[in-house]
Length: 155
Image (cartoon, rainbow, N blue to C red; front, side, top):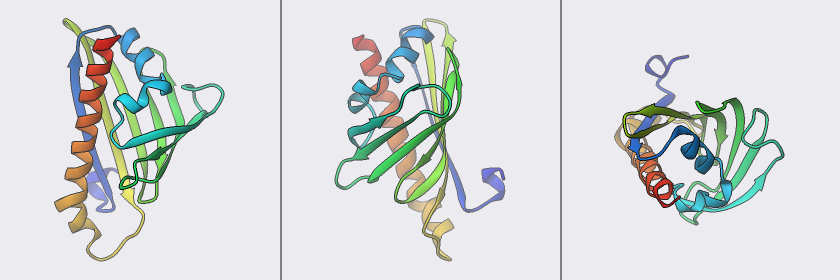
C-alpha cells in the first residue's frame, strides 16, 4: 500500500549531489568497513553475509546506545551502478530503504529513501509520526547522505 494511503507508513528521503562518478559512489557506499564514517547512529557493523551487496545478502549493525538498537538490512534488489533496496528492521520500525546513484553534470546524485511502519502502534501513532518521528528520520537520512558525500570526497 502506498504511504499516502496508509497512516501506519511513513516516507522520508534525502538527496545529495557530490563530485565523483556513480562507480566511485557505489564502491564507497557498499564498503561496510567505512559505514561508521557516515551512517547516522551506527556504532559498529556486526555481520556482513557472503554476496554483499547482492540480493539475499544482509548486514546487521548496532547503533549507539541512544539509537535504533540492532538493525538488520536484507537486500531485496541490487542493480549495479544504479542502486540497492533493502528490507530494514530495528527495534521500532520495519520498512524498505533504497539508495540510488545517478550521474549528473559534475558528479553523482545520491538519493536515500526510507518507507517505514512503526511497530508499536497506538491511537496516537499517526500523529506522533507526523509531528516527531518523520522529522527526526528525515534529519537522520540527511546527515547520512551529507556525511557520505564527505567520505566520498576523501576517496
